[in-house]
Length: 371
Image (cartoon, rainbow, N blue to C red; front, side, top):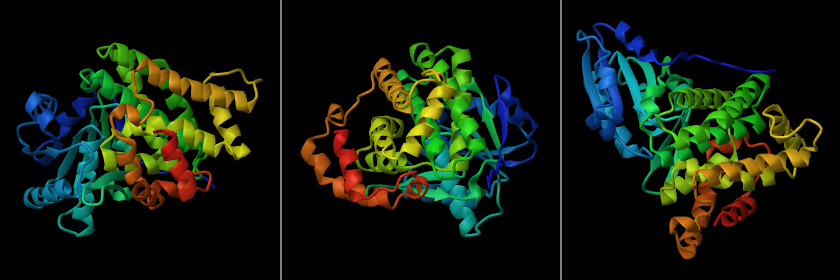
């Protein structure tokens, strides 16, 4: 049996923000970061909202949103009691909004607001998922919140908002998209619907990611990449993810490595681990055939090799580090945190749908392989 639940209405294209003009006489809370509120990007929202609305801007979102920041937002939402919450920004800002809505709902502090997401990067897919990642800065770990209550009612995909994203962020978020699509494709919760979303996402990414990296103002490429990101988000919201994300969450929580970069570094070692199971290897190969990395007559092993070579090629073309040592993290410091990262990875929610069972020793090997 295949289970698919798609709640979020998606508005995509250059005029997607026009949706906000329909909002009248509402109490609106926008969750974003300081950069968006102070750089003028917030004007995309304020200019579109009618003056009959009351607007509150909570601009305390930070990369790897913490329990503390969500707590501050919780105080604001209880005070404002908004009819609508808008998560505006990258995955961290949207996850912050989700965390605030989630805890306000769990504690029954306010009536449930309508939730609108407006991503400004093409990466996390958070605009269409029922998950949020919140960091516990005390024990340097990341925790996944998962609930249909934090699915957006509307996602607005306006590629103009991504035109100023710098190349390094374009690279990291782009590889996050690829990781979402690949992990969802082999996850234990995958089905024909999520597979189709993953395949299309990878097809679009191959077409657009390097163009976005080389020419950030290329609106056509940015549009394609924005849609690839959302498709991958829909895929993993249906199918789940796997150990790649479970480990990446710990690299981010411990060493503040950008999430997409951590995922990219782990992709090939995780593919190798999963491909010990030949059924999983053939599944990866199927995707490689579908997106025409190799001809259908090539062996599954060759198809997987082509997939891995594409990953290295993309990272190389975008000047992404391939190892932890390139980030100026010492071997001693890294090994000192190994056991904590392993323990937290084994408790990470994404592990529930990883396709091949994994334990302490294998996670240790993967972590050491990327140093």
